[in-house]
Amino acid sequence: MYAHKIRRSFVALVVALLVVVGLFFHPDLRQPVLSSPPVTASPSGSAAEALLHLDVKGRAPKTGYARTQFGDGWATQQGCDTRNIILHRDLSGVTVNDKCQVETGTLNDPYTGKTISFERGVNSSAIQIDHVVALGDAWQTGAQQLTPAQRQQLANDPLELLAVDGPANQQKSDGDAATWLPPNKVFRCQYVARQVAVKQKYHLWVTSAEKEAIVSVLSACSGQALPIT
Image (cartoon, rainbow, N blue to C red; front, side, top):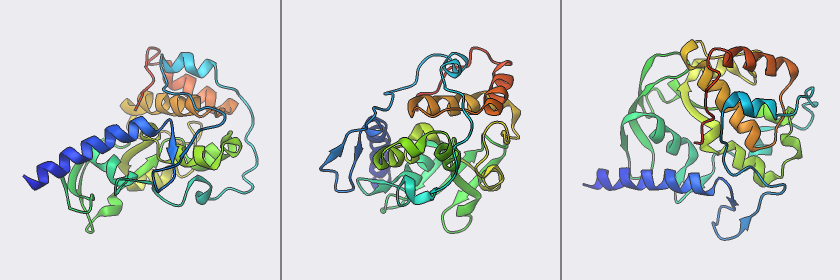
């Protein structure tokens, strides 16, 4: 019964996080910081159409980039950090402890197509939370112009995050679609659509090589819709 209550609490937290991604709160959850300029409320339409409206520019210098530009680690909502919220969303057969941490579960990895069993403390690194638009890439394609609150919002936005195979995530590093795509080809349309959705939402641009790579992927799935979460 207690485990069932924890699971219901996790579901409620995921819903709550999806609501607040349009409005970032300080850790004390009392003083809201409005995004400025405003972040798009929610992506809609097809990825191919949205891609046409993204600016195409060269990469900005990486000067000043650090992970801390996007917040000091994972944000926490009501005692649950973003990593565990995403693990709970993406894994099946999840068990959760009384500290709001996912203990066990199974991931059907979208990047490799493998099935990965997760056990906290035993093989935790086997599953990592990927920023679909790598934060280094985001920094060089417009995130420097966002406020600190917006960058932390971006780094914790469920739209931007996927639980994936750890080694595949490490291989990707800060790559964009021009330099890295998931080995699991059947997921590539969804992958680039999610990148487009994130870049649309946070007013980031694409490079010409990145756009060409995304167009090439979407040519096989022209009707691919943008994800909203």
